[in-house]
Image (cartoon, rainbow, N blue to C red; front, side, top):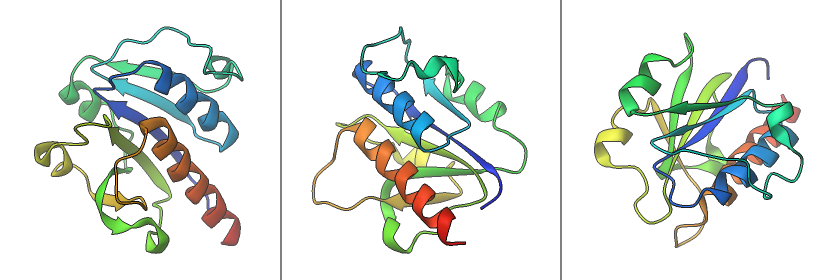
Length: 144
């Protein structure tokens, strides 16, 4: 698969999740990560010191994030929708994760062009959810 992708968290509750998300972003070839409505300082959970390899962007409001999306990319929400098993990742994508306890609101989901669902009956840790998305994209890109 040719293209790029970024992944980020909207309103994260735990800053350690960003460090884990950052490390797995480097492992699975993400072009960038981002946060919306969350400040972040380096955490020991970024075991690879990924700040040296993968840029992190901060947005103070959702509108600022939306105004800075790359041209011709697909905003993909991670919530209840199309099962990831059958999901075809866009070539140019920005994945949006919500906080574990609240997920993404209906208003935010309405802004997404696609929405994908991860397996399981319960909500999972946001950094683990992000890692699963990146791994799925990586594996499926190797098959094409």
